[in-house]
Image 1 (cartoon, one colour):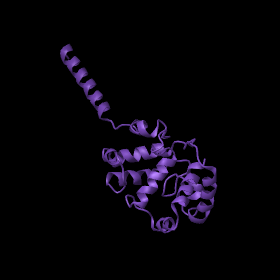
Image 2: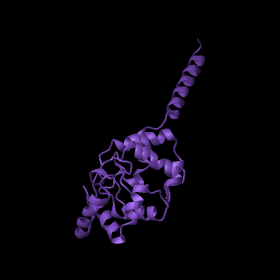
Image 3: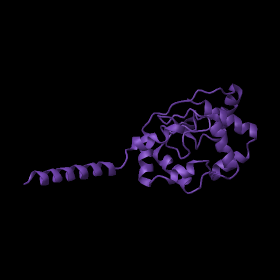
Image 4: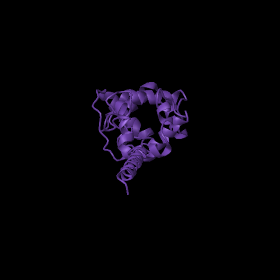
Length: 192
């Protein structure tokens, strides 16, 4: 075989191999890196209005992203972000974040409100928000040690019907005063 023809075949093979590499799907870690600017490099947010997502159950992550993508959950930017991924990419990110260790936040809280919130938790929230809001597999996400402003904004969205509130939760929340709700949120934020 002439040298030119061999060289042409070799270069063609290299180009085809290279294009196959370029077309490979991004890894879960690469996809998750796109979340780092807001949610932290390890899914542990440093911004008080942004939730920690490390340790979140994959099922909950998938549900939340679907709700954002379909405008079923209020957001400033997450709706647009969620629509930019395929279901497969979201599932890969969900598995990635579910495999990370949840990191507690350090925030100043009111000890009296935390104590009052603990009593309210036992009476109103303990049946659904297991382990004081720390159970990743319950269908409400991790509430324990989330940033207090994030919890407050989420509750405002629930109360303004910008986010669907489960019927059991709605019955409980409607009976609570603003001060009691604040105490509950402080309690959840205080959990480690």
